[in-house]
Length: 147
Image 1 (cartoon, rainbow, N blue to C red):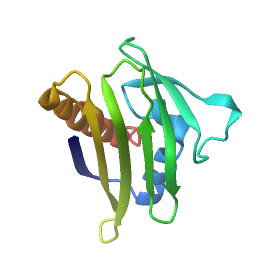
Image 2: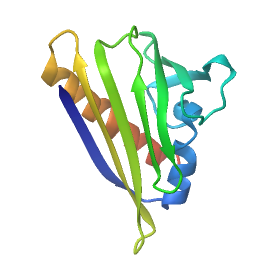
Image 3: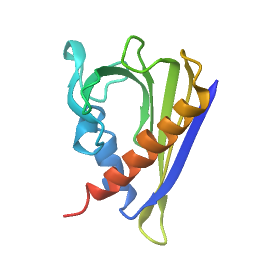
Image 4: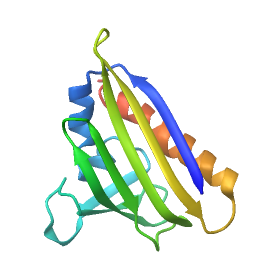
C-alpha cells in the first residue's frame, strides 16, 4: 500500500478555501492538471456518490472519481478514483482537510491518499501523487486567489 501525504499553509481564510474546494466539479478552476470536468448521470455537484469525470491537461486521458464523504462543519472531503483511467492505481482513496489558523486568518491544508500501483513503481507513484498532485495542487489553489 502506498501512502502519500502533503500539507501546507494557504494564506487565505478557511471559508474561502473551502468554498472553492468543496465544489467537487470545480477542480479545473484551481488544479493545473484538470480540465473539462463533468458530474455524471445528472447527480448534483457535491452529492455524496456523485462521480466527477475530468480530462487531464496533458491529454493522457480522463479520470473518474466518486465523492465518498463531505463535511462543511469539518471542512473535509474524501473521494476514490475509479479504475480504468490513465493511471495504474488500484484502491485509491484520498481525503482533504482544511483547518483554520485563527490567529493569522489562514488555512492549514492537508491532502493524503492510500493506494496501490498496478505496475509496481511504488516510489515513483508515491512521489508523483505527493508532489505533482498534492503540492502542485496546493500551490495552484493558493495562486487561484491572487489577482
